[in-house]
Image: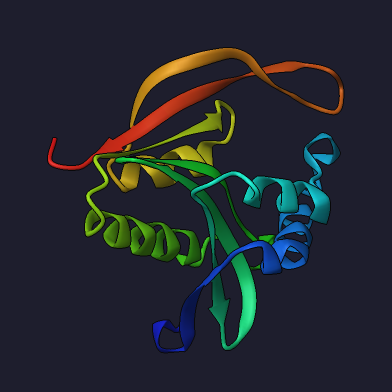
Length: 159
């Protein structure tokens, strides 16, 4: 179980691209079609409003969330916790930390896409009051070439 006293969330930009790539690819190693390298993260950070937050346990990175702010909305681009650290509350801690931070920044809503078969992520988002508002047919591909729908979810503040 996590030790909240030794948890730290740090904001990182493009300087964290290599770390984001390493954490991402270790987290999604069972989905090689979803591999992102350091250059992919550098490109994401070139888009205005893109910010990353790394969660560390005893100064060791265990995951991150990458968001993009545009006026009064935020998109969660990607979010992952290393498999070794899953199911210990790190994802909930980080997502709630980001939500709380955004509530104080005149943000009206947060939205994201999630694979319809990613039950753990959907449960997390629902636990944090996100609601499904749509579906994108065949949005994701897997390594076998299958198309997987994305659920579009949002959290509205003050709703």
